[in-house]
Length: 363
Length: 77
Image (cartoon, rainbow over all chains, first blue to last red; front, side, top):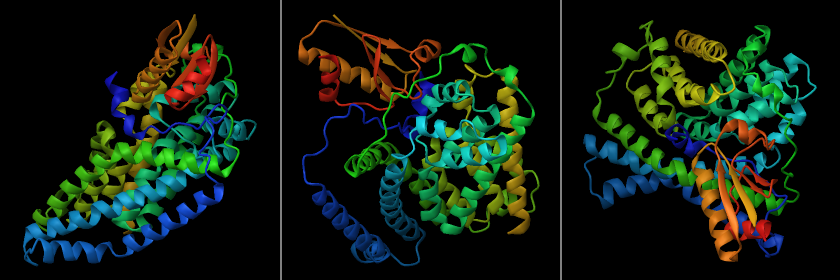
């Protein structure tokens, strides 16, 4: 099935240590020493990347300081290792955090919570619970059969794919922490509010009936019990996620570097600028089918921003690419009737458009 | 005769799990059947919350991750 193939690089799965083979027999302290050494080397390299990139571009490749090509080459040489290094570190860290939040545990936290509290919690948990589009249905059924309200389930379903570590790393690395924080907080807001609205609409009858006749799933996976296992989970996450997205990141930065060096300044202001009222909804519409390239799209978007595109428009585009995906809609059709899928996408899209206009207005 | 089932709608990890399970069973030299369960309603009958999942003789052994060939051998021995 090609639809799920597209999603593969975003798939991170839940840990299951019930049955896992015994960890490395090395002494735990040894792990810690390795970890500290790796972190120190990481820090040293990361802080000197700019110097290394300059040196490579102008001394080794002997490029002209003012040429367009050198601007593009330097951007590429600097950004690729920077983003990949950040990605490794953050994916590892998130991997460890995620080892505390298996889907089963998240469900346990959410069941029995009142609706508004549930929406907020679900959106927050969505950011740290391992989620993969191929698991969206078992998760949905698992939540609903456990008695978690539909709206709360949707808060989770909006937040889990939209706010993920890959998006946050790229935003932080390429745009800085402010935009990463804006993205995260507005993303959470959209997840909370759209879930709450869906809850108010009482659309339970638009869930396929077989869902309710499903047996409530058992707690099949045990939480990791010690730090060795958590660290291993972190390393597994790095191998899994970075192994799958690195190519998209390199390609995205490559295209971004091209735009950086060759597209004239302010070129985009004419159709992605602040004054263009239709640019936000068009950006959102364009973003829906572009789901699979989230890792590659952010570097391109960063270059666009540098060429006169407005922040709100760019933010809306990004959220739509990452949060609203056609393949996910098709997958969800198995548990949701069309009316509920359209409502879900409609509400989230409206939320994204509002955020887009808001940022175009205030920035 | 071991009955091995792989639950998953067809993502990359499900294929990998099927490959690993096949390799594990072959290495053990046991008699087995391998079935991929791709229909979501059938998958949900096993009451799992994450895929892919490995089922041996009707019992869910692993969910949401791809165990190594060696790990799988322990489940199907």
